[in-house]
Image 1 (cartoon, one colour):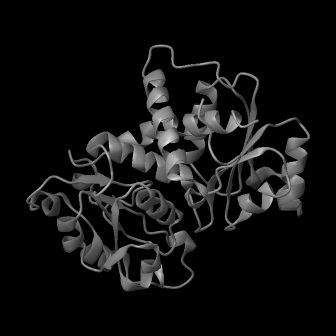
Image 2 (cartoon, one colour; image 1 turned 30 degrees about the horizontal axis):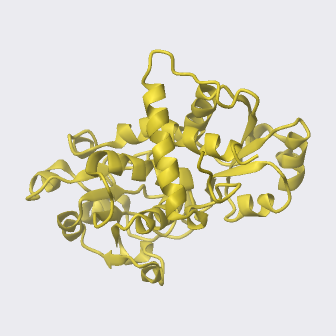
Image 3 (cartoon, one colour; image 1 turned 90 degrees about the vertical axis):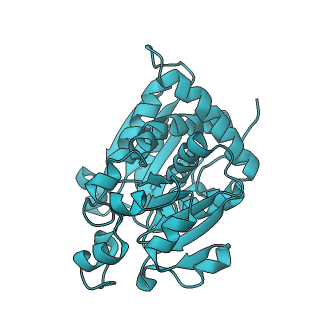
Amino acid sequence: MQKLSTRHLLGIKDLTPEDIELIMATATEFKEVINRPIKKVPSLRDVTIANVFFENSTRTRLSFELAEKRLSADTLSFSAAGSSVKKGETLLDTVNNILAMKVDMIVMRHASPGAPHYLSKHIKANIVNAGDGTHEHPTQALLDSFSMREKLGDLAGKKIAIIGDILHSRVALSNIFALKKQGAEVMLCGPSTLIPRHITDLGVTVCHDVKKALAWCDVANVLRIQLERQQIKYFPSLREYSLYYGINKRMLDELDKEIVLMHPGPINRGVELTSDAADSHHSIILDQVENGVAVRMAVLYLLAAQN
């Protein structure tokens, strides 16, 4: 069996193009499994996985929990809200206490960029980064790539526009790394206040006109405005953002080609996407959710094989 080049999934930046291909191929096999009448395989029957979430999550957490159950792993779920973290316990102490219960793998979401990388230097268990602050969200980028490949085939030469709040998005950075490693062209689109400085150093182009971005791309991956991460006002109002950067079905219908519409969720309906666009035939948003389980099964399975 082929193996990943790394013991942890901390970010797409650390993966090779061969790693991405292996994850995609494995996810394809697992997608067939989860569409069977009996959706379970015994692949991780003797593996214990702890889901350690220091930030709120619905899709990612449920997707990982379901992926673990489909693989027959034993699971623990930890939420910072009702834990000893509130009493002042450090991250390392919290995780070491969990590992003392003979846990093999940690799936972690944390508000601080680099938290999984820090842990990986101090513990022996495999770590999967389920989102670290505004840094990376590798499994989201992998499931986005998997969903695009289902619709478009090979991504080499394909044009992908990432539209919205790039500055505060961990999804955007992971997607840029993943798409560039697969040979795609990437354009970022949003207000200048929400585009990071020097982002073009990553080999992407920047556009501030959403209609031009839609006309250029094969896939529009629309990101949520992350108001909870914004300490200052980056644009006058949500209404004004929607007026200039919101996407509706009429805009999609006016294009002289079919494009694919994506969103990592949760959607602010009426802000970045109108309901008629989000629910249109262009959209593969629910496919992304389904593919998330298969991709996370692949990641957990391949990392467990490293031990």
